[in-house]
Image (cartoon, rainbow over all chains, first blue to last red; front, side):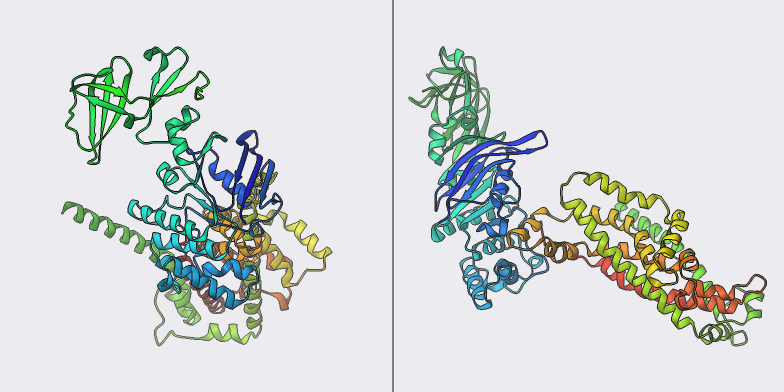
Amino acid sequence: MGSLQLKSIRKAYGSHEVLKGIDLEVKDGEFVIFVGPSGCGKSTLLRTIAGLEDATSGSVQIDGVEVGHVAPAKRGIAMVFQSYALYPHLTVKDNMGLGLKQAGKPKAEIEDKVGKAANMLSLDPYLARRPAELSGGQRQRVAIGRAIVREPKLFLFDEPLSNLDAALRVNTRLEIARLHRSLKATMIYVTHDQVEAMTLADKIVVLNAGQIEQIGSPMDLYNRPANVFVAGFIGSPQMNFIDGARLGNARAKTIGIRPEHIGLSRESGDWKGKVVHVEHLGADTIVYLESEQVGLITVRLFGEHRHAPDDIVYATPMVGSMHRFGADDRILA
Amino acid sequence: MSQARHSIFRTGFVHIALIAYTLISLFPVFLTIINSFKDRNAIFRAPLTVPTPQTFSLIGYQTVLGQGDFVTYFQNSFIVTIVAIALVLLFGAMAAFALSEYRFRGNTLMGLYLAIGIMIPIRLGTVAILQGMVAANLVNTLTALILVYTAQGLPLAVFILSEFMRTVSDDLKNAGRIDGLSEYSIFFRLVLPLIRPAMATVAVFTMIPIWNDLWFPLILAPAEATKTVTLGSQIFIGQFVTNWNAVLAALSLAILPVLVLYVIFSRQLIRGITAGAVK
């Protein structure tokens, strides 16, 4: 239990359309991530699913039941917010138990569920504390615990890791992945961080300007981007886009090659170029190359390489690594 | 080093300015209190000296308390002030919540309409208010005063509180909605505790003009049973003779309750529990 169907969801504020007809199916137990740049409507979509915003038109179904006019508390969902949104005047325990208390569940059952969730998230020592006495990571764990306690059909996460520092972000990410495996619950997660999206998702939904650009598994999106936007959004450093005409390809307007799919050689290769800038990251070396034939391109080499600015090198794309996009920016078959 | 010296100079200057301001504000209060403990001759002969054993006298307090009705006057002032503050805070906060939380047609217009009351003094409507109170049979009741003061306090309360309500995190309210709290519980249990400092500010701003008001008690409730302290003290001020001992004693006594209420509210002003709620 825990499937979700969205049918042509539209949302407009006055004449400004934020969501322009979203169709989506989420199966039971899936981890789906909405990803996209700021203002693409991903948070609005999540809040529409939660019932915090009403869709202007379209239908939201949870487990096959239309919930368009059902209050958020009755939809069988739980949400984790970027700002944690813990109740400042309640202890951790009461924070986690409030939803059940409102639903009129007996005290013993609440104790039991809160205890289990706290155990799962190693929050036991903090149950009597107030949010103000916790660190950021602990607060977010409490917020996640509050969601678990409700045993929802759908978990909704609204950029839950954005307020955490880098190390804590990785830990909490692991924790969420582990949680998804052990609870086998359906989770919908909003983020603008593609690393989070790639590492956590079963299915990624790429949104742009209120529309879905592509839906697919992380590797689908990486290997077979449907259009220029997805190709550019997924993968870091960004894919190189080269004018099709420069490579003598009449059909393709744009040709995309990922930086890691280009090889460099000092002796010979397809494109001769001058090194503009080099970034040494230890595991990777990123080389920025200005070539006469294809313009400025980024090349990602694995391991350490001794390239320096103003070196002359030759770049060669790997066989079969080119993505060809037509005049409408969509991939060519 | 120069940085440190500079900042000491600055804090020193700020403190001197603040101390000077405090002295200036407290001086009239001080003067009222010392003179209320002196006999009539001493008040006129040397108004700026503190009472000495020769000039010390409690005659003013004896007159005021001996008048008998002053307990009633105090009680009336208290009832009117406290009930009016409670109503202003309750309705002001509710209106502010609606204005800041819900999007509805005419939201901005409604906010402006409520804010107009800050600019237009309620006393302009005195005649209409009196006619209304006569028609409603509320003349010479404390209810009349409470109603007028509630109306008088609401505009500022709505204005200040709605600004503060906007700062309460949306996520927190939404978390409450998902947990099944009703809009009323969200208002009373999540939002109000977070804006307690603002409520205290509004309470102080509302309280002082009500406590000190002479106008409406004089017009709407001048009967003996409904007189407030400010109106009650007026009996000592005559056209030809003023009983200064009694007036000063009454005023000194009137300062005390306000001081107590202020201390209660200002504790709330300082305390805030927002910290840690949201990052």
